[in-house]
Image (cartoon, rainbow, N blue to C red):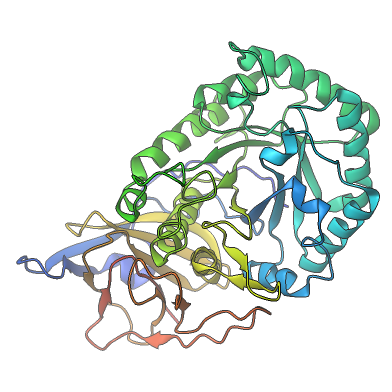
Length: 459
């Protein structure tokens, strides 16, 4: 995994060759407003934006998954679906089960995990039990994990969402100084058993003010500064809707702000400690059916990935439970894994093959159309357009070469829970996928229905 921190983008110039130097027109369909001529430009020079690590994409699973056989080399379909997202991704193990009384993984379970990592090429971030465990127990488990995972192990995290331990796992008044005191004791015990151990944290749920003290005072210094983000929830609340999910940009900006200020406070070269969102999804407490399992959630997830990449974060891990509404990888009859809508949002990002990403502006266009200029690892420039409006379509006209190709993320409606496609094709259980990219229309017009996305690549 590349841990080189990326800096907050600085400077301003046109990007994406003729696309971003040219003019575009965009307007919402179904409203009496004419198309508006607009200049598209990148917010920042792509050359000045931090590179997106090959390890950016990731999944997060409950540690309790190790008690079964899902994460094993024998699960060839799941391994293939992971590889479809990239061969250098990151698997994070943690969640509530990592801090609750449970059977800790056996040597056989860790052997299966190591085999799964080899089968995917992915690396590992592993959560240790602070909530109910002891220092000796954590150190012994860390030693077993380090032996099994070897070079694939990126870091240990100590405690899952410690900012909400009280009152369930700790007494009222539990605070960041209390957490740091316990964290240091656990880290010291782990280091005695695994001298080369590296750490990440604080892996908070939502109290952003915990991040700066951790960044400044955790010793040994963490290699990753981590947090979680769920814009909506709980999943059983009828107040959770697609419209609210798609309008959650404000909450994301706040969550990112706390982390980015903490990272820069360390005084390390900009932007400071590398940042990773080690657990995220649309709706906490398992998601909400009809929201988290829809095309809208796929568009939301794709936008979240591009937004973090543009800000210099080094990665993201979508929380995954096969039976939950929000899972990107579910299970169908017979136990085979199946790509759910969110998986297509992840694949949309992966297919951009981003080396660098910058926010782009469609002047005078609907604010609900998110645009990102992309420098690909294959040297091809791209533009990602995501219509975050769940009710209205958008029309965009791009004066770019007609040999540009389009890869569309679409379904019959924002609420569709099946029939989601990328490039006109679904992903099979074994990860087989045969996309059919489109050619840009001669007039350069791109219509984006609600919660659709399109990747425009210059060839």
